[in-house]
Structures are given as structure tokens and as C-alpha cells.
Amino acid sequence: MQLVYSFCALGLLLSPISQADCSSASKQAALNFMNSYTQYFKEDQPDPDKWVATSEALTPGFKAAYKQLIEHAKKADPELGLGFDPIIDGQDSPDKFTEVTSCKEKSGIMLVKGSWEGANEGMEVAIKPIKIKTQWLIDGAGIVNIPEKEQAAR
Image (cartoon, rainbow, N blue to C red; front, side, top):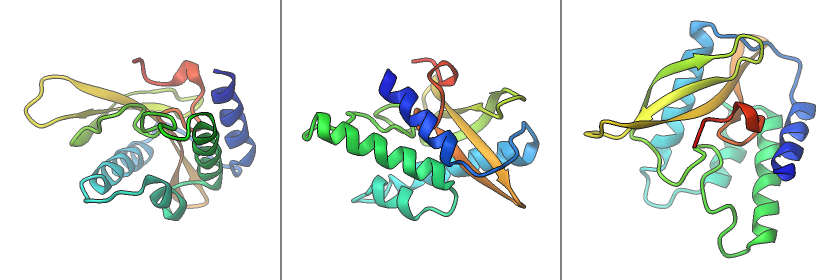
């Protein structure tokens, strides 16, 4: 767990001065990001590391924390790595994220709910959109740059 705290702290240090809130624009940015991320995994050979590195929707702090988390996990277990997707905070990705179920005004961290087609239950993922100048970017998702106490329950 100390590893997760270290990556959260690194991401916070690398994050630019920004504004986080629970506005409809920030909620839409969160849903758009999660849906574009899950859509990407419908491709035949997805490469999440490359996707994160090239995404314009992510802050530099997010990218650095993600990269460090993945590198450390691969060092610890070269074959398995983390064993789950740190952005989804799980192994399976919902078909679609449809709503923000909660948002903490002070931190701007929200829970977005995703579900699978035909399933009664879904899952939630913690995500933190921030506004830099005029653009909403994602500064945390899943376990990347999200403090453990604010991550979605598993």
C-alpha cells in the first residue's frame, strides 16, 4: 500500500496548478474519458501503456504516476505485472460508463458507474478531472493518482 501512496504523492507533485470541481463539465469529461478508454480495448491488440503515453486527455502527473506504477509492478513480477488494469481498477472493463454516482466537491474526485450490456450490476471507478486553463484533463483514475481512501470499493 505504501507503493500506492508513493505514486499518488508523485502524481500530486507533478500535477499542474488546476481547478477541480463537481460541475456538469467535469462530470462529462470523466464519462468521456472512461468511455474512450474502454472503447480502445475493443481493438484487437490494445496497448494501454502506449495509449496513456500518447493521450491528450491526461495530465503529465497522471502519465508519470501510471508509468512508475507499471514499471514497479513489472520489476516485482515480470510475468504478471499488476495483474489488473490500474485505470479501471479491475480486470474487466464495462461496456459503457453512464453516470457519475458521487463527487467530492473539495477534491473533485468522483465515482463513475459502468455496466455491461444485459447485466443488472455494474462497477464504479474513481476518477479526477481537473481544469487546466480552459480544458478538462484527467489527473487520476482507478488507482492511478487517486488516494486509497477515495478509490472505489472492491
